[in-house]
Length: 137
Image 1 (tube, rainbow, N blue to C red):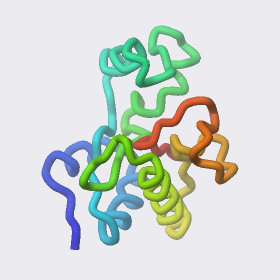
Image 2 (image 1 turned 60 degrees about the vertical axis):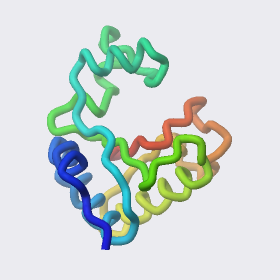
Image 3 (image 1 turned 90 degrees about the vertical axis):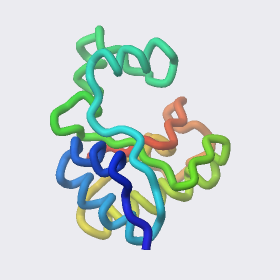
Image 4 (image 1 turned 45 degrees about the horizontal axis):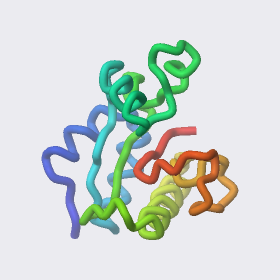
């Protein structure tokens, strides 16, 4: 059975208890890595400036929407292992699995592959495909 490594566990521990519950279910079925939980304002700024995030932490309304900057984090980034950033279909399948695991235990999530939750995952819903991202609703 898959298990989280020390790095993934440490990142997951920075997240809201409901996210921890969901990923403790996910890992019993799918080997995956936790890439990021809580992030600092400086890290959020770095990601915004590089184009990897649409949320500018220097804009108060964006900062309010930045789920990773909360304590505990209301968002987590995770991907199936081994990580293949180019396999959008695999990432989308994993996202659906994670959202389904959450739903099974009463935790509603939104995924960065399907921001508007309309089940269309590979057409850049919400104009930004953020495959690893999961956040509490």
